[in-house]
Length: 362
Image (tube, rainbow, N blue to C red; front, side, top):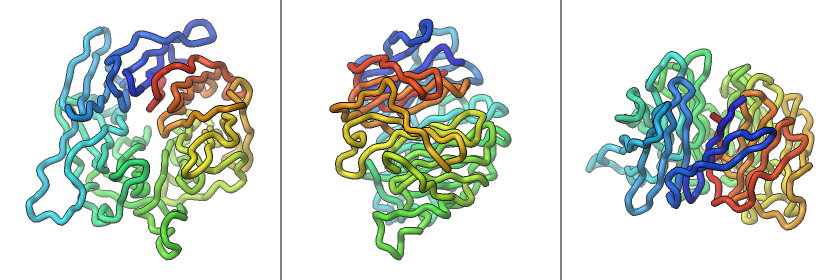
């Protein structure tokens, strides 16, 4: 069970610490600055924070284990666009949307997903970064387009705990992509997904799918869960094929999904109304949990606001701890809720935080 969690918000990076059965807020780092994503590296205890400073650009900071000081390190940067390029996308890092550690056998390796759809790798704890050209240069990238943003972005990076060279990334809107050789080559892996926002003849095109979030069940790494723009999907073969989950209460639309760390049949979703409204269904907050691989769901509402609630949970706003029972959920309206019984009951940690972009244990 983790004693700490990190909240990436529009006004700074907030630490949470367990206090009895609840959580206490503080300290706060980078107060007033937008923190898009943070990472607590379980391999060496370092903490990373990605900032989006608008005119001043994207910044990345690291705090080493045992230190109270943050050090600015290199941020992923795109190479110059070739003069003869026909690419309509600007080769400039607009946001670090995802940040993940490499495998346990890869000390110092970090992965970053950015807007406009580039994957970056660092082999030296973020001191330098390289664009993964093998993914950036796939011909299908010309079909990618923006979902919630004007340009495509990589929001999900999942390293297989059995083999660090096996990875899967999720792109909005560009589908799921898989590598079996550490990023030397990539295969689009969205078979089974459906994009209803496309013309009928293109709705099964794997390279235009909009997976909002993809999470792996680390205890059974071939099992992956996906909250898609047009529904919910599950894969039992590492993302080679996806099966739609159809028996869904409340709503099959949302952004976040959390996968149980050991039980491959259990996952949590945060349903919402699509598309223009993007608020909880009937202005009442809920979480849906499946314990049988998506065949059925329990709607969890105890302790969550049930009237005049308009909080939306972003892609990284729902997280489950290693114990499989503690979850945190943060919203775009600054609400934060916690549970220690897998969602059967929730307690309010705060309703006055800045908009929360990401929640992470560790």
